[in-house]
Length: 130
Image 1 (cartoon, one colour):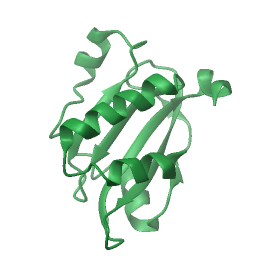
Image 2 (cartoon, rainbow, N blue to C red; image 1 turned 45 degrees about the vertical axis):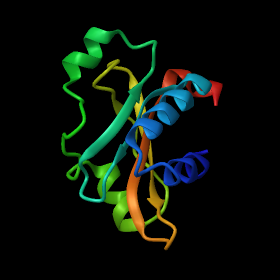
Image 3 (tube, helix red, strand yellow; image 1 turned 90 degrees about the horizontal axis):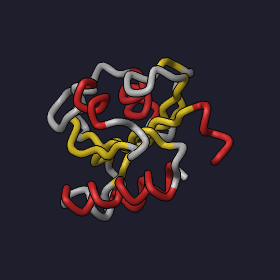
C-alpha cells in the first residue's frame, strides 16, 4: 500500500495541489489513516491531509502545517537512511492521543533518486480495517 501510494505521489510531487488532493483521496479510501503527508528531501512538510474523523480544533492545536520541519523525526530519518519503506514503533498520536504507528517510504523521481518522503499515520484501534 505504501509503495503504491508513493508511486502515485511520484507523478505529482511537483504539483502540490494535485498531491494534496491525492492524499485526501487516500485517507477517504482508507479510514484507518489519521494523517498522510509528504516532505521534501530535507524533511520540510510540503503538504498533508487529515482524516475527517479528527476534529478541526485538534488539527489546529497540533501545529502541523506546511513548512514545518520533520527532519529530526525518526520515521523521516529511517526512510532516508534505509531508502525503503519503514514502520515506526507504536507511539501516542498527537492528534487523537491513541496508539498509532507511522509508515514512511521514499518517493522516487524518474531517475530513481529520492525526491520526497511520503508517510501516513495508522491508528492502531482502526488497523483491523486494513
